[in-house]
Length: 410
Ligand SMILES: Cc1cc2nc3c(=O)[nH]c(=O)nc-3n(C[C@H](O)[C@H](O)[C@H](O)COP(=O)(O)O)c2cc1C
Image (cartoon, rainbow, N blue to C red):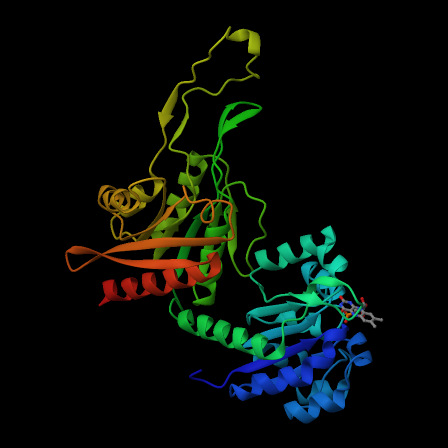
């Protein structure tokens, strides 16, 4: 790591807390400074004296501690942290984080900080697979928190299954990798305005039916998080999805392609970059029926007349003084040839294409693999983004796109 990393380790009241002095030592080996904050229950599993000895800093727990606040307030701690690691993260703490509670020092710091948050769950396997925990973890992921683990194996309670905290040395390695990833994009888009479109559109047929597609919005939301991590002011224009808005992102909700066009064109002239990840429906019904179309209305087959929707990104690219334009394409065959043709036809600066015929990536999966193509010195350059999480792919795309944007400025 190029700069010394400040890691705030949050420790909750799980049995895995007894491993945290070892975790502090592993993290310290990377050259990072570690400060620890414990929940009240955590004191039952590990002593502040051990943590203070290995970290070299006083351990904090209480929100209302006047002498500690005078030395370093909860806000200063929130600002000090380059990364917040919560290990072990109990089911209870995960629930409090998912609901945005600030009922102790640790949860208050998490809310007050801009730093990336990494959560290492550790709990009994039944607590881990409970739908409430599943829902809470999904919320944390949607908010951009990274999850490490849990591992599977023998548990303290005698059960065998998923729920063990990842071992301290592996946890430290993964945290270092995350710090390097956020350092990769840090500051690349400071002072820039970025608009991201995400999700599907819905084209109404009648008051109860519509045409749409399988886009989940996950890759677009990951692009928002990566652009925020790079320092951009981010506006998200989202179709109907059930995802939580990433922190610090201004969100405009739309339903149809026409609404998306209206929202994007109103903002685009003020933007430095427009990233179109939304799967905008190519066609919409020519006529919206005022009332529900009845089965008997059309004996046998029924023909629905469709008209082409506007190509929103091509319109942005055609603006005078257009922002840098990055489009996403989902293809099922001749993936790279089709992407190259789209780059030309739309007149955009960059295109990211994925093969949605492959079930392990794309639309509804959490992972992705893409090919990025952009104009460079009169020809088309490309980069293959290997199979990884949508957040990792997003960070790589932002790194490449911001380099191209800076090259346009020169
Ligand atoms: C011996 C013992 C071990 C526990 N281990 C865990 C654990 O590994 N994970 C967990 O989620 N809860 C565990 N709990 C329950 C938590 O301590 C309890 O839910 C507590 O309210 C967590 O508070 P906190 O999340 O604010 O630290 C354990 C409880 C006891 C008594």
